[in-house]
Length: 202
View 1: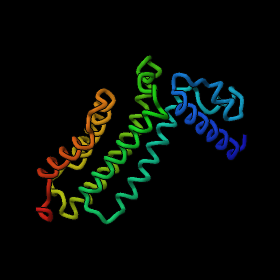
View 2: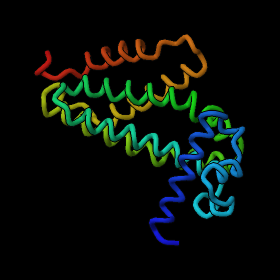
View 3: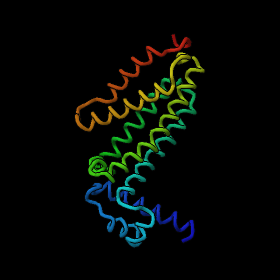
View 4: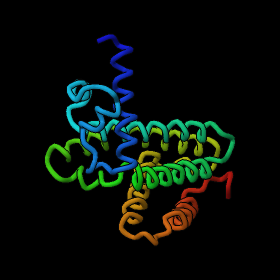
């Protein structure tokens, strides 16, 4: 199969799968239906993806890459570093909650059901966390150079805290629909900034 045809088939599979996940949920979507919508054989689907879980993984990774592209725009803007992190955090959580509630509804429990599923989940996190961490670290380092953050702030540790807060915001929101994650984040970030504020902002 030519490279262009290979990429075209994979793209069609992903687009068909995401639409199916959105309208019917992950659990109710079958590989046969994805193949039919993509106008290829079921066997061709398995040439690109070993399982439906792997299709979900790739769809989730695509979502993350889209978010990171937006983060790059925020990072390149002229606003202060603390505001950049605020915008990055909020844009990611908002889009992920929306996508999880629609496109990926029903997928999170699936990724915990068996050993294969857990491996898929772990692969996702191993791929995503370094990407997100690197983006946060870049903005934090920029903030230290600007004087927005103290020079002795550990960028890796702060990025890890931001990742933990992101995960907590989403998990609690899934369990408590009335939880105001944004207000909670704004208050928490204001508190954190109070402890790491650089001379320029004092």
